[in-house]
Image (cartoon, rainbow, N blue to C red; front, side, top):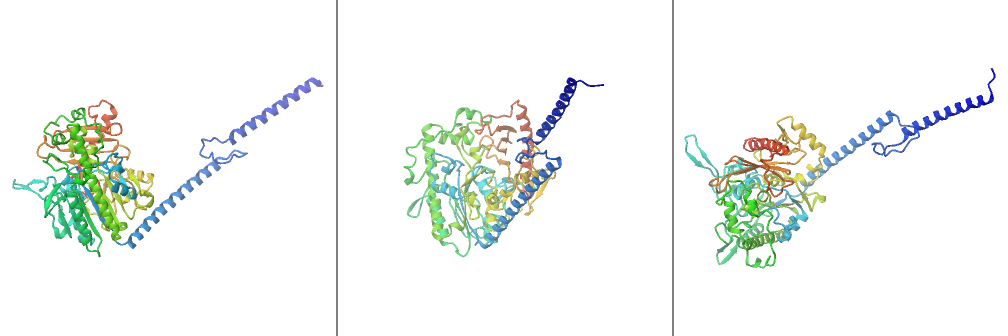
Length: 592
């Protein structure tokens, strides 16, 4: 059967159309597989004419993982090399001197370097520029003698038990009689004795010892002068200000010391402590009285009756913090006068530090000296309607810490660090600088891990988290020095902990005993974190919870909040608080 021409043409058109559709489909498929999605992890590779196979994608991912592992190993190798170099450098270096400036009642923001726009502390500000300033440094008990006992022993109050000035705790003997204890830490286990007897240092103390009980001078000191409780006193034919006396005694030690030995000196200023019982409170040197004359000291935001009324109901007019508020801050004029004299005394300490550092420079010892500036406790300057210290609020527990260390990494000089460093860390840091390990009874750690080559800072965040999660499956993880870290808290997925080989603490336990009676200074305890803080007042079984991110002034107690988040946080922190408190009161060889 013959086919007409129009029919042939129609068939040909259909065939061509089909071929075109097949070709367009193939082009579409090829284009679909060779177009690179910029969100894809291989998006930085050039486009291919042909679609990459699954095998090539796997190969690329494998190669990328290999490169990452190689880079990580190189970083770990570099960190190990730096640590080895640091060890070799330390072995070559002559033993470091250690100079501790330890002031009194001086809170964290009484420094120009800390952002205070009024107080003048040029020497300490320069020291911060040459070293490192720790912005979240705290004390574990905010009162003079307990904090100093912690410095000398490296222990919490719960372990050293020196809870009352001059006599320590009172215990009940098996026969029922009560006995007042003294300083219970063995005399050969203080930092003074260890540095003198074990490390061969020439050891001095100039200023406030703060215990009001005798330390064995032969075991602990080559030079010892204890001045405490006064601002002006006639000695011989001259009237001395106590900060001048502290400076003169420190210079006498530096000039008369055994130059064949490295030295440790604690310049323990009584300033800026008030003279208790004297209505003038703060009595600076005559030459300082023109300072701050034309300044107006800002009144704290929480120095209000509203803030006072938000304190727990057992804070009455006989509370010692409220009594001292009336001594210093209950009128605007009194607040200005007291704070100006307080700042004058702080500036006098700053001048003293400059004199002593200048002497070390003259001796050629400045660059071979570990220099630490810190204080024993903070101070309320009318916040919450209070004065002085004792309680777990930020103004009371946060204190300055500046460290200048010849071993410090160059890139970290002049920087700040916001880790939770504590006064229990001072003993371990000082002993480590002298080549000694902390004793098993000590509860802090060497802070140089935060600023030396190949130390804690070299560990990656991933290593830190893995280590914490590993440790959470067992009770403790053991360090080379045989002391142990507690497992992380059960809440926070490993976020809250007392530290590990690869990380610094993110929480700590605070404690303060009752003094005289609960109406005078009630006992207080706390679990301190950067996001929330839990308070416990043992005499009244009273709890508080504060959101530190949204309420840094600690004004709004969330204990009665109906918010499920706050209720859960309260339960979690209460549980962790009990755990850390039990550990602090245990005899475990532990780092908190």
